[in-house]
Amino acid sequence: MHTYGYGTGVDGHLFDFDDVVVDKAGRRALDGLTGYIPDHLVTVIAGPSGSGKTTLLRLCNHLDTATTGTVRFTGRAIDQVDPLRLRREVGMVFQRPTPLPGTVADNLRVARPTATDDEIDLGLVRVGLDGFATRSADELSGGEAQRMGLARTLLTNPRFVLFDEPTSALDPSATNDIEALVAQLAIDGIPSAWVTHDMGQLRRLAHHAVFVIDGVIAQQGHLDDVLSAPSPAIERFISGDAQ
Amino acid sequence: MNRVDVGATGVAASLVLVAVAIILSMREHLGLERSILWACARSLAQMLVIGAGLGLVLADGAPLLYSWLWVVAMVVIGAITVASRARAVPGTFTIALVSLGAAEAVSLLVVFGLGIFPLEPRTLVPTAGMIMGNAIGATVLAARRTLTEIREHRDQIDVRLSLGQRGSTAV
Image (cartoon, rainbow over all chains, first blue to last red; front, top):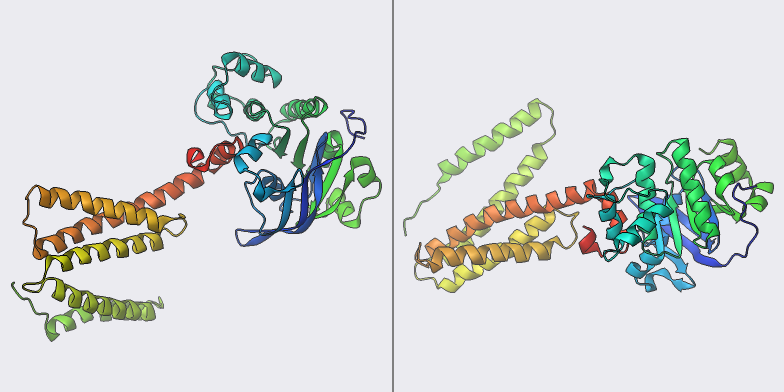
């Protein structure tokens, strides 16, 4: 069903969630969430706005912490893992393109201060930004800034990348570029989790689908399996009632 | 030491201003009467306690140690005040305690070390009080400004954290 032809593959778990509750800013963002994110290809986390998708992603990068319950990274409780090491193993690209002050090369060197000019150039070629190293980062278009953000993240050599609705502010052309990049990364061996509320994007990108509704995982599994037998809550989301 | 007594007339005159505020609150239906009365009673109690304390510290023949203890108490109470006015900044009490203590120490060292004033209770207590008054305002302002900067640059801080930078570097 997905566009990028991943094949079937074998799903090992990178993150496991056991009865995870997250309370923040006076509201319950996750409400006893249990499930997993596989260490394979692209997992799309879908669900209506405010359902807890971003919180789930931020838990994986230790930017948020569980109020109760357990998050495991490669089988270890995530609070037992050095967060600095975790964040370099599990990169994150955010919803809004966020250029830091300076040139594109300066931005990439935030991820790896010792990167040589050649490494910077190679990182930029990887995301289709060859020749951008000396450009001022705040002069980039939204799509270019988001690709720079991805190059910056990839410079930490992550084993997995978290994407929090990275194309929500981009036009269709820039969206296609980012999706193609992420799919190619997955095929090349850097799997990812991608948050969206766009069913079209889910169908294009997902190998594994996780539906988060009202702070819990309503259903998850191989995309084709989930969409062939969706639960009533997911049917409502797909038909737009839960948006 | 010159003595200035605040008699019943003085207290009554100051209470007139409180009464005016209460009347205005009632006329305009602001609902502030209880708060004004409570603040007034609290201030009165605080002034009585501080007055009694200062009476001991500034009494003729009182040892200079009492004045230094008074300065230490001002630093601690100042840090509590800063922490209460900038609750959203974690660890404010300790930071304020160190910064207010340092501000007092350096300023008093200059004033008394250079012999600008003679070191005695009647100069030490008011000088330390003036330094503390300004330092509290500056510290609260710095804490709130830091918080505003963090909120305004939250996206950039998240990016830096996600790239594996330490919190202190990311901020």
